[in-house]
Image 1: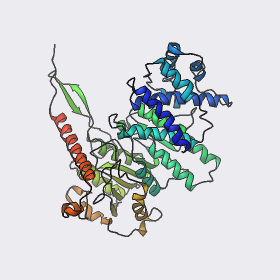
Image 2: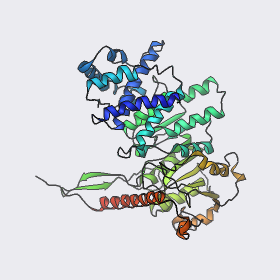
Image 3: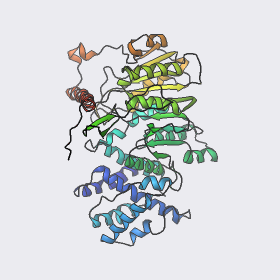
Image 4: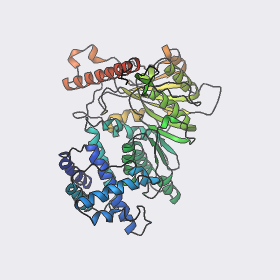
Length: 491
């Protein structure tokens, strides 16, 4: 049994005890994050490094107490540390104790976390252990955590064709738990084994920048990077807790790798002039955007274009509606094709995301310096969806399933691309001549429509029906929320 699996099993086994007290997987992972940070900060201080956590709010202050006194001290620590800057503030931002039994908290502190020396553990062991916990949490469909977890096989393929280097500035404006950062780091270390001191320093202090709007997810991301040795506990956090779409941050990046949150609309509840509560779409209006819309995915496409340096490159997961939606969608696609080199589209299969109802793609484009010339010459589309079926449990997507796409992409020289059964080229003129400049293009025959003898397994068919129904339900829910005001009683 691997060291990683031993640690994951050990950490996860205690979760089952705490679940009897009403803690969810996510709650447990949150508490582990607080305690791991405190323990690692103390281990680092013991090695002679500067103190990160103020004395009296540190790990030793927990070890000297038991029972209710331990619980009170733990709450005091969580309340106090959230106001600090840097990694400390991100990890403890709005932190709360969710462990109601002081005896179980004491066991977690003194046995589970306290029995290991985490700083001496190899980064790939403790980092992979934490990733294992994140994946277990994502698989818990009731928690909804799966929406922050992009399939690691897909991330790996995206990173491999984008080929990050140690001197880049890399961004994920919807970084979730940090999957793209971790794999970009893996790729850089594998392809550049002889990093100089400046490059090593850059990896820990300037290589990655991310935004995450959800406090708890941001803390998981920060801890994930810390455990993998990418960020420093005493340093500034590479993760900003904020709505990435709120404004242009001013910073520009060489590479953007991201899977923005699923769901089309941004909205909030307001009280109108008649005293009734209604849902109002939050249309994002920014001077750097081509079109104003409440569609989050379309806004992220525009935001990513803003984030890129001239000749910067992007790989972004987008749902099908971004490819064909009219109105603002058409405006954005036409401007993107004209001002950026939109060169590759990967049509993803269903059944690969924890969040159901997702039909998604990966759009690859490069920002070009201002010019009157049309920047997109050809769009190459790889169809990994037609007649291909995956399920999370019985037939999960693996990295090998994406090998052919990676080979066809020709990251070293895209001029060497050739058409295959699943990889077709469409010229700019072909695309803009289509209705609404739609990128929703497919050419392979769906065998399930014509050959009943070659139907997928019943479980796969059922899973795809669930995906379609979930997507349809979400679309109707969004429509209903935007049309129907909610009546409220007024005094």
